[in-house]
Length: 87
Image 1: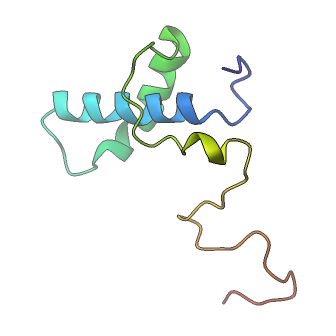
Image 2: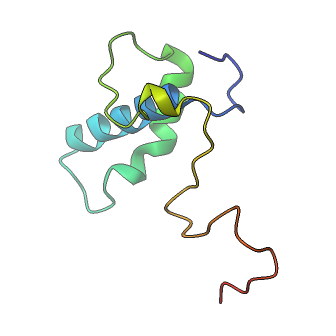
């Protein structure tokens, strides 16, 4: 695992999402959803580190290790024609 918080680390990201869900559930599942707890979870993971054995369902399969995957939330193919207008 990389110790640089600016480098992409799927295991750390999954641990943050897991921690955010736990915090959200502990607060009674408010309307903001677990996404509202990402910053608090990020801070906690930065302090605690990524716990060993954390369930990490969102990790890509090992055969995709090192393969760049577009962020589906963006809805933009990073390898698309740069002259294409997405509007």
